[in-house]
Structures are given as C-alpha cells and as structure tokens.
Length: 225
Length: 225
Image (cartoon, rainbow over all chains, first blue to last red; front, side, top):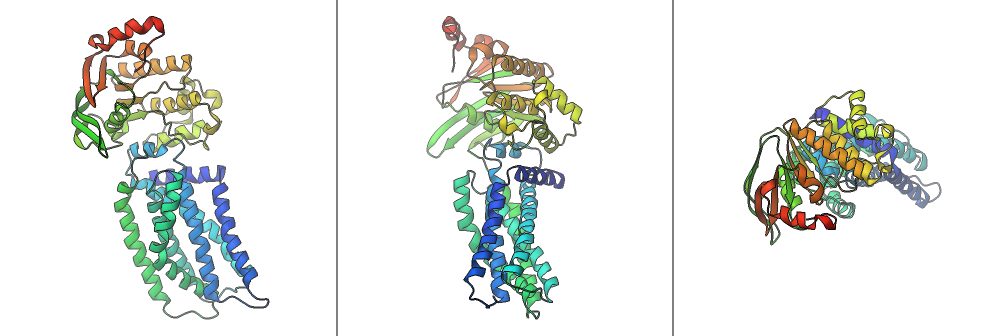
C-alpha cells in the first residue's frame, strides 16, 4: 500500500508541477491575506503573536482546501478515479497518496507564509519555536488527512468545491485552535502556558480523524458517474 | 471466467437491469449489444466491480491484477507523457516493465514517436490507442471493453481488433460493447443482447436472431445497436 501511495503522490506532484496554476493561486491568496492585514494595521502598531498565528493558519487552511480541490480534480477529465478504483491495491492508498502530496504542498506554502508574516507583521522568532514545530507537524498532518478524505467526497469540481468548503472548516476548528496556540509560541517573546495540552489535543485529533479516514475512505471514494 | 447470477440494478426508482444471468469461459469473446440506454455500460461496470449490483452475484475467475477495463474514458493524465502514463498504471498494477518494454507496447499501437509527448495534446484516437497500450501491457485474463473503437480510425480499429483477437487466443475472456456490429460481429464467439432490462439473448454469435437483420441492413452500410 505504501508503494502505491507513493506512486500516486509522485504522479500528483508531477501533474501539479506541470499545471500548477491552482497551487500558485492558493499561495497568492495566502500571501494576499497577510499583506492586506499588514496594510490594515495603524502605522507603528504591531500585530500580536496570536493575530499573526491566526493569519498563518487561515492562509494554511485556505491553501489546503484549494490544494485538495485541485488534487482530486486531476482525476476528473478522463474519469481516472475508476482506473484507481480498479487497481489491485487497497483504495486507502489513494487517500494516503493524496495526503502525502497535499502535505508536501501545504508545507511548501507554509514555508512562504511564515517568513512573509515575520516580514509584513514584524514578528520576531520567539523561544517557543520547537513547540511550534511539534504543533505544526501535528496540525499539518490533520489538515492533510482530513482534506484528503473530504476532497474525495464529491466527484466533479463544482460539487467538490462547495462541499469541501462547507464541511471542512467546522470540523477543523479544534485542530486550527491548537495550531494557533503553536503559532503563538513561535512569535511570542515568552512561551505560552498549556502548550503540552494543545499538543496532546492535536495528537488525539489526528489519531481519531486519520483512523476514521482510513476506515471511511473506501465508502467515500465511490463511482464517478 | 465470469459468472453473473440474478444481477439486478436500480438507479433511484428506475430499474436498469433485472435478473441478469450469464457465464463466460476463458478464450471467449462476447459482444454485448442492445439499444442506447439498455444498461450495457452499467452491466460492464458491474462485471468490473466498479459498481455493486443491488441483487445477485458476480464471480470472476481471475485476480484483480488480471482484470482490465477499457472504455470511453481513457484514465490518462494529460499532464504526463505517454511513457509516464504507461509507467504509472503499470507500476500501480504491481508491474515492473522496463522502459524498453513500455516502448515496445507503444510501438504495437503506433505511438512510439509520441512516447515523450504529453497525453493532453493527443487526439481522441491517439488517446484511445494509448489506453489500449495500457491494457496490452498487462496481458489480462478478463478484458471488459466499452465501445473501445470510439474515435479510432480504420487502421487503429484494425489494430485493436487484432490485439483483442490475440488476447482471446491466449485464453482471455472478453466482453465487448459494440456499436459497430457489422465490423465486430465476425470475430465474436457469443452475443449477449440486452433488451427490456434483461438479457434477451445469450448464446453463440452464429445463432443470434439479430444477425439476420444485420445481414439485411449490410448493403446499406452496416448496422448499429
């Protein structure tokens, strides 16, 4: 299953590189969010660490929705979804492959958002950045796993776009809150209290939702007609 | 190789198939015929395992790796080259064919000059030939074809028929949905005719009652179902 998942992830990455318009679009949307917010601040005012962290995860969440719309749309033109379903590999390999590819795209986008926040919102790197890295890893994993599950819900671009946006944000709230706490740790001058609890919450969320995704994906990745 | 017992299928309140019974031996080619909307594609997708029947059973005498499906939808990725598409589907089915082997199959379908061209620029006929190459690479034991001749020129259609006949000679069981009865009937061993949501005829091609009507229509340029 891992080999098949990596094959699918590599194929998707290759296709995104060839026709990466949608991913660049999501990157620009995130950057625009950061830039417009920086313009909204009064001259000389500095955004709080919590605000910067919130912006970081908002940009990441938008990027994730667009990325998974794009990744599942790759199968639409020639109904390759049926081909993947006929392949003699567990169908969960498709979920895992899309998760891996989505995770790579998300991390690449965040590698742009993070320095952009430091520059446009004048955020220094705080002492809590190791905790931020832990929460970043857990939150990204949850975002990618859930995005990959819900992205498969509806074949067809239009249906997927509306379904994904409507369903995913409410489900992501606990994970995004944990991510924002982690982001706060990255930018704040002192390490905030209770970070371990948030790391625990993100880990538990991942365990539950990634496990559920593995079980539910065969029912979600249905016929494309 | 393939046995269906009491297969029925409904889409909402509409019954598409009712009590379909049939069996197909290895080394046999069966034409699946019937008017538009008779449920031919649905039956083929049930045979492939792409959609489950509401009632009845489907037994395939081969493993998932030995089943191949070739339909209107090519399952090709426009952003990948012909060679990359072949390699992806081959690896996903557990194969490890060398580049030379992939090139040899491309040559069989007359696409060797386009090995490094992206499938997105292929005409419908070229895409279908590449789709055929994807199937030939695996030498399937059960081959399900949904109007595979759509978009093919006369030469490509002849290649398709030759390759399918060769697969039958090697013991493959083949179900072929055809809209070109005059061209496809001569190579068929059996005919499966769908009418009134069930199999109206399942038997030797030579005894199929529709053959007479076809002969009568032949001078006017052939017949279609």
